[in-house]
Length: 118
Length: 113
Image (tube, rainbow over all chains, first blue to last red; front, side, top):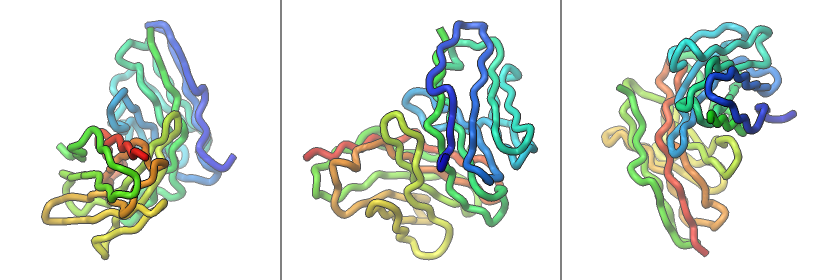
């Protein structure tokens, strides 16, 4: 497809369940980001991949959150033992080049996965 | 802590009137600045960005933004609002050399016919 694709679109999980959220970035995009958007808030950075390398995971809220991009294309965000505070929209974004000192590429966002933990 | 502030939760404007959505930032150095728009059930879409140079930046759909370094502001403007401009607008900043784009909380724009 032409844009960033995320699945599932909606996910309802019972507290304590594990979930996996998928992101298909734009083909050829080097950089991939995950953001968490709570209701009424702006997106908050979770993690950044340059190809398959996870260069920054400082935004992951706890060790229950894990992200991977093993072949430098599709990425999966996994949340273990979900809690109610994990309820949010999870946004994936990609950009064509690596983030660098002179890079100012805008982010291309997917439509997000809305996670509700009951 | 680095942050982006959008002081207005909501802006109401009549169709045909000019609109302004305010943004100020507290980010070290000379960050890149962006505006994104979010329509219902859709992801964020890029509108425009400021890198260096002219303080008035032109973007998509007739939007423009005015950069003011002394006030650390990057206000979004449009000379004549359309009903279809009604959406959620996010200001964002990227520190040069960093990975994290920092977003404001968003401003909901309502344009009334």
